[in-house]
Image (cartoon, rainbow, N blue to C red; front, side, top):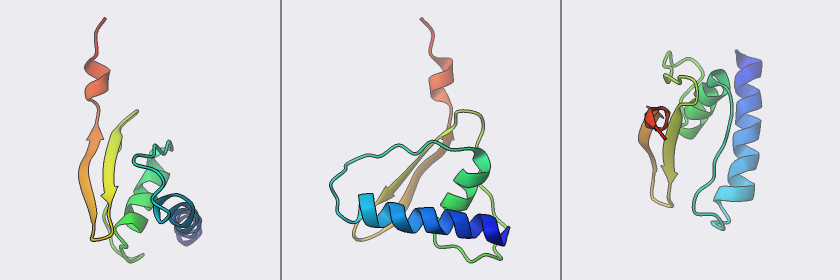
Length: 87
């Protein structure tokens, strides 16, 4: 788990410095599997390694997180409304 978290932290750090902090982008989509989404969620909220919390992430679940200069905010998690779309 420590190695997995370290990989997520390395990605998150690079991602923040290259995409978030320059503020050149309004919305960015990250696509990953549930395990990495959980680790990125922990990085996003700056949770310590020992915190026993996980984020439910079903197949094709969409999570919306917001980062501003004032705060980080989880708007919604695991939305799957797009699966109800009918032609």
